[in-house]
Image (tube, rainbow, N blue to C red; front, top):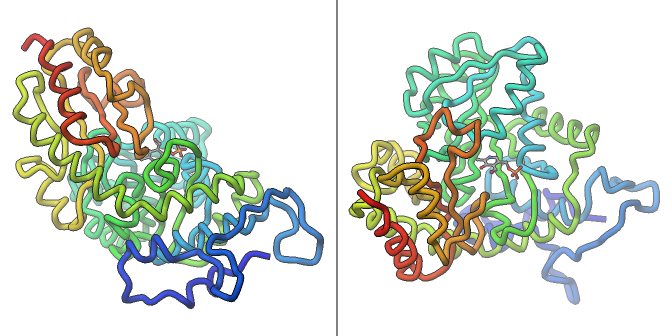
Length: 383
Ligand code: PLP
């Protein structure tokens, strides 16, 4: 049987930093001969008369991962088969006929979930710009849920999560923060007043582009119970192998993020001065319109994503992407390898980004090699 998260958490010192929690939380109890890692157990069914009798209820691997992520976020964590499976469960917290406020810049997959629910008459969607707190709160009047991303995909807009959460609470609405780009090492939204936090652990937490997994951290046990019930009833349980790999990825998140973030900041600075680039979006860049908010709500750093607009046509941008050798032209983010893509190729993003906007996920390659790749490919863009 898996240890309960409570038992595991007892060994943790609240004075430790998040990086230490990421390494130590969710491990088996220390006793002679005990393994350091929760062993991977691949079984769909268990002998009866136990808490877990079938893998749709969970596994030792998901319990260990949930203990670790819950400790990091300061709430009760429930894991899902993907970030979007987790988002679907959170959307179910909106009552029938209720209203959700979405940020204009929101991951297009999340927008699609709510658009589908709205088309079915299940709920209503209002939108507001996440960097305009007054507009978000005006839209929150009479709403049931406000959904923001700590650092929004793909324009890297930073929401003032504490102000939005306080205003939403005063209006009786739940605040959901998708902290996929920030990770629990850069922002703990529950501490900032949010009710529910979403992570696509597919990205930085897993860190190696080899799994799909989502996690929801809740302040309130009732919400956590609703997440677990939704997961069970919809069969949205992550596999034990994915949970094992996500926890292994979490162990190195601190060093990976430090490195990728430092490289992202340096590349953003260099891109801002490049004649082949017309705009850079990186909240860690002094001069970026999001910088002041970022310093306040993401004091430990702004993550490993950089978006920029190529000073040229769509065809020239595609040609630029084709010239890159080190960056792979692929979607997703948060892995050790650097990726890049033109986001307007997604209909859900085309409405909010310029046609030449490229979103880069910065990995762990050397900064000078990544820069040489970008610089050479950009120099051929006529400006
Ligand atoms: N949230 C954000 C901000 C994302 O970027 C993504 C995926 O790109 C998701 C949620 C969905 O996660 P998954 O791909 O694990 O379903």
